[in-house]
Image (cartoon, rainbow, N blue to C red; front, side, top):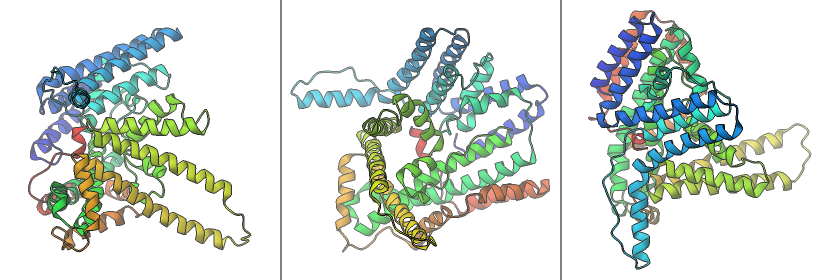
Length: 483
């Protein structure tokens, strides 16, 4: 059930109406939302509902066990079992085929071909997201950043809540569970945020992402050897915008839908292509995942403690494992390793520049200001193009395709086949929005929240109709559903 479909529209209208009709009975409301969330997930494949409940129940029991003991050794054992159980489930469904295929190729290369127990494993939608969310709950209870939840119903709603269930954002227990202990209230602020984000997300996904995917990115990546350098260059710019609009569009809709049901999710994207460094990019891109990797992987590895070498090692391992999280393919592994290596190089270069930058006298600060502006512009351009280079491997179905794509940048003499004024216009428009005032969305939401109810309904309904009218035919699945 995709967000931009009639089926989801009907589903959400029913959920919205019933959830607020029973708001006076908090437990009944939560039970209804859990049922709605399981129905939403079961729409994809009902066979995985048991897996979702099993993951939830393991983390719930681990939280109770942690709440009942102060023994350090036992607490470490409980959190270790819960984390290993979650990662084992994720590893089997997501990586069984990948590792077995890779192992078979390794044996074949060594002349030791063997018959291995291959079997077809279906990847459950959103398994990475609800697994990471469950792990964050147990670890936060272990660290005493969140209280263990006594109610199984609350944990079920926290992990299965349908707006974020299949593609995030990854919600922290400390942010969401306290909201379940307060009466649900639909304020004007909730409505303003919900309407603005839903319309924003639909426009990003249905118009920009879908058009760029079908008319530019997919044809260029299908056979990069058949197109020239201009198509390849605009194609990778298009993919940078497509994946941003696709995923941030999903996050916008998820946050907006949650707001209309009375719950607050944190921001998941913050104009990432305005970043002047890779470090800043990862503070702005998929914030819920990047902060998850920081708090539950980078910091436990040692973070920036223990000297420069260990810091570079921890940066690399964090991004390397982040690449593996994104998909069971060596191209994703390379994508993560590339970002990890570049973050280390960037950190090293910044430190060396700070050490050896020549001092100068600049009483008015004019030279320094000009230099800082120039460095910032160069940083934004360089960061964007490093990210785009890495996107080639993220999007390509193999290293061979990626290599052909990169080699094609030498073919500047060939005429363009897929670059159109409309596609270029969408890319330029999307980039302009990366540099608009960062509070623009909040400002719009404040205006919308004060509109009379009939105007609000007209704005939402008319906006959806307009987006539907100008969008390309059909709705492609969100890119991050595969993760």
